Image 1 (cartoon, rainbow, N blue to C red):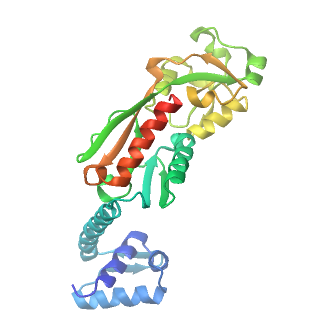
Image 2: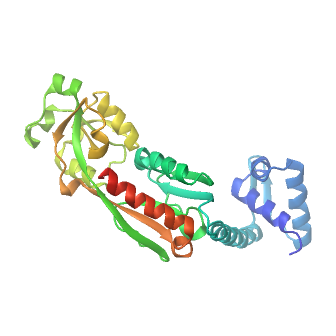
Length: 292
């Protein structure tokens, strides 16, 4: 194919569903998008999209093109990630991903790493989505739960994150502290919005705390912490994080069954690069020094 710009344009139209959406992603005028689509359809002798009031829908031929373009885009992303990871200096983009719940630990840690290596541009991305290391979406991932099993990843145990149950002083003054499970119906708990959460502490909560007693639910750990501090109820927090708040009362001490394993994950193609190794060593030293 002579003109990759046209293919790239068609790919974005298929992804976004509209000319204006594709134009915004590509940084071009919408007329350029239309011109590329028309030229590509003429070159191939086939209609790639059905035009309608809501946007563009790929035809069967368009779906075929989308699959090929997606594969090419993935391969270029993978190549880009590998190239960015090369070099003998701790410099350039360094993409790190973790769950949102770890941001309170990771962001300060990455800032300290950047002070040691000011030529590094940190890109810290969080979310529930599993970022694909094999396509260069991140250099290093910190993941929780069962050991990741994706092929071609290097997985190293980092730490068992200890969890305990806490309540604010204001909550305890108003409601007291439960003596055991028999008292849970008289108390209020802060829990996850996702009732099927696989976090060990929330599995325990699901099995031991009446659902009606979980009266404040949150989508992420930061919100849980804020709710507990505000007196909304009893909830789980990492021990190291709770120690920063003298207003908290420990309701139940940490238990092994509540702890969550954390893993350092890298792709085999980037694992041995200088900057990735520097960050992995730094994270391990920081975790050991801070006593996670």
